Length: 321
Image (tube, rainbow, N blue to C red):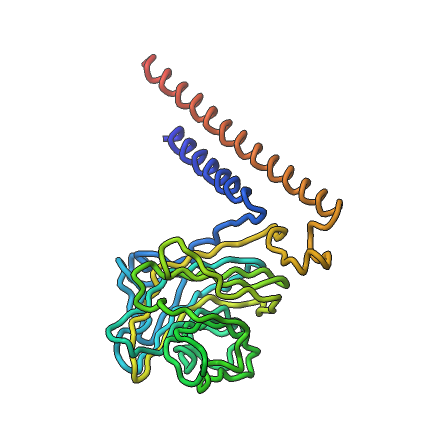
C-alpha cells in the first residue's frame, strides 16, 4: 500500500514537471488554476449543487452535456458566476460554448464577465448594468449599428457608473471588437480564448469557422481591472430567442511575459528582455526552473526507492514467518 501510494505521488510529480516543460517551448509558462475556476461535465457535485459556482435565473444544468443559460424561449435571462475571485495577475480563459436555435431571426446574446459584481440579473445580456470590470459580449441581434455585420463580438471596460449603450449595441462603450458571422449554429466547436497581461494587453481569439482554426478578434493595449473580480457568464433573450450554452471553461495563470510584449513596447524598451540585462534575467529564470525540475525528479525517484525498499523488507519479513 505504501509503495503504490509513493509510486502514484511520484507519477503526479513527474506529470507536473512535464507540464512545465511543455510550456517552456514558448516564452510563456502557464499553471492551470484550481478546479474552482473550471467548468466541465458533470458540472455539479454529488449533492447536485456546485461548490464553486452560483447560477440563477433561467439557467439549466444538464450534467452530461451543458450549462444552458437561456433556452429558446422569450424573455429569459440566466447566469453562472464563480464564488471565488480570479486572483492571477496574468491569465488565460478558454471557453467552449454554443449559440443555436431554429430560424435566422434570433437574439439577444451571450456575455463573459470579469467583474467586481457577481450573480446579479440585469439588462446587459442577463447581468447587471453599471458594472465594474470587463465584459465581453457576443451580440447576435442588431439594434442600431449601421455598417456592422452581426453577430458582433465586443469588449467593454466598465467603471461602475457608465451604462451600456443597449440601443446602439454598445457603440459608445466599445473597447474593441469584430464581426463573427457564422458563430451561431456553427457546425464546428465554438470557442473563445481571452488572454490578459496586466498593464500590457488584452487579446481575444475565436474559433468557429473550423475545428482548430483560431481567428484574432482583437488585441488591445493595457486595461485596468478590479483587484477583486469574479468570472461569470450570462445570456438574454427578448422577443427573439436562442439557446445559449456553456460547455467547458478552463482558466490558467500565465507568467514570463517576454514573448507577449508588443512590437511598440519592444521598440520603446518597455518590459523585460531589453539588452544584456533582459537576456541575463531570462537566463537566470531558465536556470532556476531547470534546478527546480531536477530537484523534483530527484525527490520523486528517492520516494520511489524508499517505498520499494520498505516494501521489499516487509515482503522478506513475511516470507520468514
